[in-house]
Amino acid sequence: MGSALSKTTMAPPVYIDSKSWNIPQLDFRVENLSHPGAKLFFEQIHNPSDAMKRAVEASWKWLYGWDQDKKSQTINAPLAVQRVKRITLTIRPMDGVAYTFGSDDGSKEVHFSLNHIVNSHNGDTEAKKNMRVREEILGVLVHEFVHCYQYNGKGTAPGGLIEGIADCVRLHEKLSPPHWKRVAPKGKHVPDPKKPNDPGRWVWDWNWDAGYERTAYFLDWIDTTWETWPSSGAHAPTELPATSSTASSAPPPSTTAIPANAVPLTSAPSLPKGKGRFFSALNARLQNSEWKDEVDLFLELTNWPRDALWEAYCLDNGPK
Ligand SMILES: [Zn+2]
Image (cartoon, rainbow, N blue to C red; front, side, top):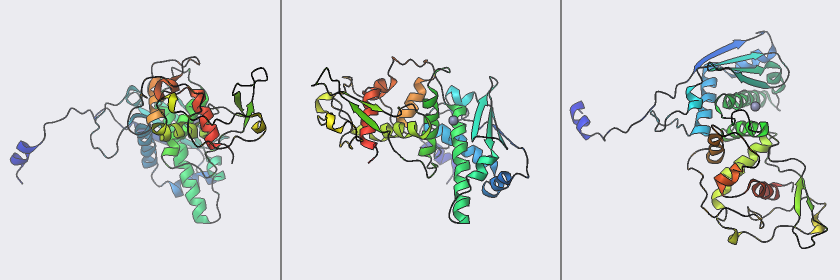
């Protein structure tokens, strides 16, 4: 077909800004090439550049709705994306798993433990060991690269939330390690002896901001279930377990998401459509606002108070 004809039948151009979604300069360093972790790394990750690029794009996708299927993006790159100019990955012998730090000139440094890579080479067969170590490397890279791109309430957001968002992206990328499970903490129901008719409250042995996969599964649960919640307290269930006879046992699973005594806002939920909805919306709120315990961002974004959501999550996902 002639180009003149196709020009006249093309749809009018839509304003797009693809230029600012730039993969930063990617640098890679190895300390101690003779370390067995370095050997494993290169056996499983043939092209470090591709692995790093994937981690960048996973961060963009789940935090900001970047779409890998579109050659040109329909949304502008947020400041958090534009300001990262260079990411240096260093694999080296060290304790721990990995950590990330940055400087004001847009350079980010990710340090990744070769010892951890060796320790991740687990499984019944050689093939399973190799698969596990490959997924662990890619999963840790995604987690650390999220730290390069996420907002943190100008440094005030709880560390557990920051780590939870990073692991939530890893979870969404299907790179969670085998020991991760959606398990809520153990709960103890505490009735108020002075108020026999009061439903009392639940006390949990860890909280929503415990961090890492514990927080990640809570954020993921909100993301995947919020559309099914009642929009008004009038439809909330009434069977919240509250009798003292259950006080010492684990809470039974609840058939519904929201506890009866939770009070939502009267307006409709305001979560955006698209990928990573809840935690990406939370991340967006952390760009300009500092974290304040008395300001419930969960309530603002979902219509339900954070404590009510946490209780519902624990009752739905507690030890069975
Ligand atoms: Zn982290």
